[in-house]
Image (cartoon, rainbow, N blue to C red; front, side, top):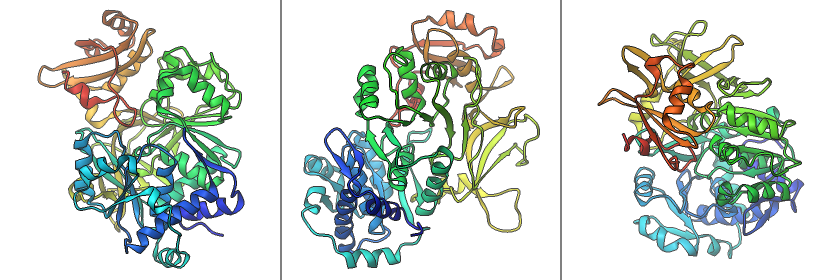
Length: 501
């Protein structure tokens, strides 16, 4: 059976391994056949209501039911958007306003909360749909209409302004990504994922669709464990987890708490990470504790189906070095363009742009933002060809590996010098005693501001980095925090930090 839609992955796994655990959370484990049965009941309800190619909001706690609901939307020819039950009301309102969904799926525990923002949108209860039978003929009719270019999901990113943008990803893009991940990282039915990312964050796409495609098993790690190192590592060991794909912040917390290496996880074989810069100081702690693991730095924004470049760590790095983001994924082209829209030469810095089937269709119900980021390839004047401008500044090193420098909007002009704030952050990260740091530019007062956490004082950091960065890059203002603000995706919340300037 050739795979055309993501539901084909589930059909094949349910046929081959019907009784195998597919997904598990703190409350239940669900087999591949159960995922299919429950998903098709949801799909029958949606198809019966004549919904097709419509947005379906999933408003549930992070659980196996969310994943089943994703598949229910997919089987019916609709597309899904998860809204976390912990999201602030103002963000939910903005998402609902942009999306105007056909329906909301929730459970009885969250019915009143869902009704508070649903307006005229119908609300369906998960448990009610499970009491009904699925309709084979209705689902076959729906499948016959679905194209692989149809939308699979819309995930909302916060963006630098804090206003959510709905990134549209097709079935075909997700399948292309899933095929690449399987081949590159040798994912199989023996793979056991320890899943960290929230389901509204694109990092979760790797775990979810690798599990469905390869009949693997995915254990959802309770969020509280990321503050309880002993329980976290015991969970990984107990569930025999062999593959993790986490945001660097999660890996760094464990390294900063000196927990890495204290608790054995004999099954762990692959440590993948993506979403922000991974400092080598904390990565080296992991590499020392788990020397036989494969480590890979994956890079990419939500707009290109999670990942467009990757680097499998193949050599030693000192704490103050930057980790490469490596090379373009298969079937993806990376263009690094300078200010004149020409390819960079040598180690010249430029904006990373992407071409390929991985590209999003743009931002849902937001043509202005779409047109600004998804543009005609300036190197091709002959026919329509879209590239995505990531806004990330990169360069090639002497090995022709891509190196991330900073966001375009983190590149500042200070004292007559063009400065990448990421370069300062890398230097600070290497200082012993620093746990997390972030640098922003206060344009009103022309000051570089350093925010940091750790067991060290500001002046000690300044003294330590004087030998690694020039004087004009030394932060002018230093703010020590008890705790670094973290956004919903587990990254440092720069929007919150800007309020402290």
